[in-house]
Image (cartoon, rainbow, N blue to C red):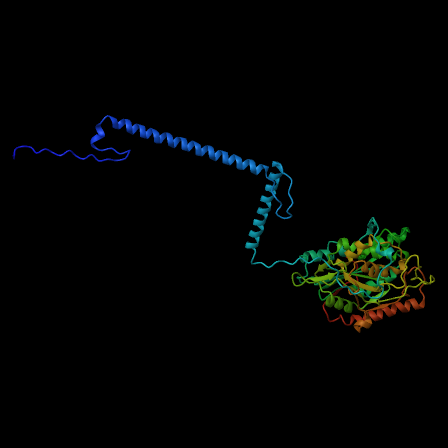
Length: 479
């Protein structure tokens, strides 16, 4: 019948594996109990598995640590076992390794920064091949240095022409201590060995070549070096002469021929302490008439004082060192240049020496005492060497001592000594006469007066070459 209700078939219940619940049974009483049980099972199982994994990891790490401590590492280089190192040794080793790595990193950084620069070559000083002429080696007594330096010489009178208010040094200072001005283009100071009694010789030189004070801008000054005298009136006359001309240098030492070496050293010491290094130092004796124009022109050509920075001259030594200067450091011999002179053993001659004093059979190359010129810078070096060198040679050989032995002790060979004699230049450089009158107190012989007249006549002839050149002369008293 249409109105009757048809019986519905019983729904088929779906089966599912736990945990699976139907939507209809969600409100039944058994469901919450099963859900709580299953969740408790899974939570307990997960907690126990995590604990087991943690315990296993701890045991494994502990076992590995114990095995590492008990094991002995092998040496990778030699294969031998190294002893056990303490913690302190391990710390030091790690610190040193860190420092080494830091140093290598800094070195690599420097090479990267400076890789555009060329590597500088470090050249150790080596011996220079210097030229030795004649005597190859000085005797040991002269090559050895004394332990203490010789005391400096004390001076009683000094030349006002050089150090005075209007002297040579004041002119140099006024120009700005250089050669670039118009007042001074160079300077030569002639140190003339004399004696207190040689007043007549000094006056002859003051009347002739020593009266010229300037040639073409080169300042020329003469200084007479004398020793001490104990005679009252001679000492007074020397003081009057010094105050009149201002060209006397007196030191406390021998005044006669036995003090020739000390006079040379006194002049070198005074030049070292008072003159600039680019001045020229000339040493000579008081029986010489100079051809001043030839001497001036030769020095100006061979050793001109150069204003920096045009060029620098280097002088090499045998030990590998070198000395730089603004002018050649040479000694110029204007009288004679002796290359390989045989030593005189006959004691009857004044320039002889015995075997105990000097053992070599020859002298080193040297300039004779008539006239030699050198820069003051070289004089300073020779003077310092002289303070530790024995003074064994006779005073008559003072030129050998200064220009031969002291010069050789600089270890620069023999190329630093040059011959500028009349024969080498082809022009007369000087006239020397040992018979010139020394003093006016004694009666003069005819040959002495004749030698004096020859000196004046010769100078008059040489002065003709200066007459039309710019020059300044003064034969009057110093003011």
